[in-house]
Length: 271
Image (cartoon, rainbow, N blue to C red; front, side):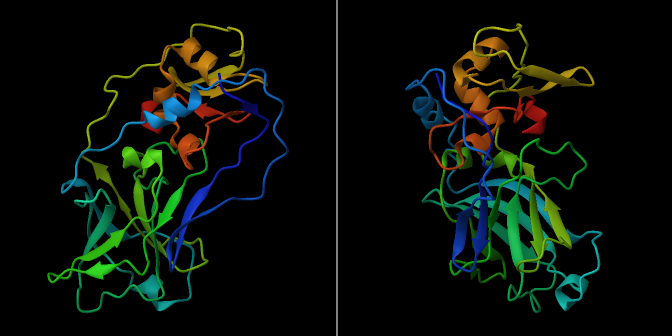
């Protein structure tokens, strides 16, 4: 079984000029004591689905201007736009590739580009704070055909199936106003096609609240001392499937935890 904490510290992966760095927002109150410790969490994280698609394109999209709050900068008036594809190189590194609409003026100087879990396609957002990876770094390069190659720095288990990263966003360094974005369409097959979650009712160490929306079971809000093992038994899924539904739980590769009062996702469409 797995420890239960009192609150969630979500770690966002934010890229600076040196690539991807993990930053944490101000912490919530200290964790509550655990009811039972268990060695099962680490194997579940280790069994997170991993891509075996080296040398392939695994997602596509198009970077276009979007409506935004006013930004007094030429980049916002004339953003970088173009075709986007996500690839895996021969060493397993995930790369975002952009073919600019105007290669002659394409310039990453003074721009922030992220691949993020935030959605721009009108679909429901994740209930968790969305992780993001900075794409502008010293590892960037330009192919002879003008395609910009932006590797994702760092690795953690949830990048084994990165289809929870829904968008590429363009903004200014230190400014949260996004003025161009690409919604990504993933071609990687789901490791759990047809996954359905059913609530079998309260059981020991899984006595939290299940939430539904339009007849779909979407969220589970843990009680104190709930465990991952018990929660997965209650909803008829494996521990690895729960982590796959909630990639933030394995963002650093450490032991995943439920957080008291902080909902976890149960709907594959909201991953």
